[in-house]
Image (tube, rainbow, N blue to C red):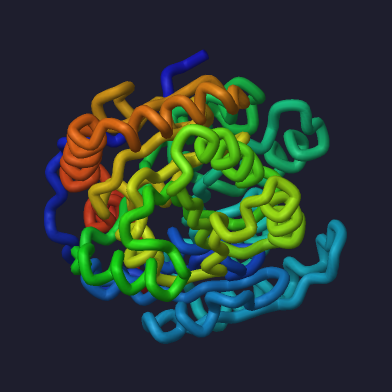
Length: 389
């Protein structure tokens, strides 16, 4: 297998010059999720890079569409119905002929399938794609769709080497198209002390309690049930520990029932979806991620930015960014007792927790800023020879 190129973290990033670049980001929807937040982040940096952004939602607008438009990117939607609908390429192509994007940047393989075909119809040559998760192992139909869609992309970005390796292994696209561009986040600071007090008061968490927290959609893949069971074990040893879950989703009802069943109704706190989770991170003593699968999770980068120690399962792109016992603790995927033990170790050792948090903050400052990520994509767009027409 050929090596997948990664744009070096230390590479210099010259100021973008030349004509304005019209960039169309394409997603299935702008529903709440990590991928969608990445798109909004890129939109927020577009003007500073000389880009004119638009967003196309193939299925529905989603809850983040209004926020996206406030950032300056018009959101269009063609309303594709469920199922494989090749005919939807026609209205997408019509829209592209009107807007004339210089670059079409898709963010889901189905988005690439439809938008790539439409771009070809509309005479737009520069189509790029970002793969945000692992989707191909054990999924023959998805692999076939990926290979079909991948023909339309000039560049096929992945947010982690782990994802890129899977794409290469299943021959979704040739390795010459593959490049790793890791996610980045805003580094805006927040008054942590004030935010922590406010959140704890609002959520009914005692100021002196230890708080385990996580941020993410309440879904099967995120496995917040693991953290609820971990809390039950932890409270047998230390009664004053609470769990703060930031996010919403289809598993919320099941998680509420599990908390009641384990006698934790007063110790598990559901904050719901928050478009600015920083103040909730401030209220946590340790950030825990129990996902069964991950790409390059923004939530870990945000936890580091908030100076929080991180404990997580060893999955996806996490081993690429977490240096074991220096910037976080990774435990074997699915080992709930080991995850519980790691959380307890961090809670019980404030000095160690502080060291983990400081190293995490240093890493995100140096390697995972949104400015750096957005500039990398802009460099890639312009390297394709895209020009405003």
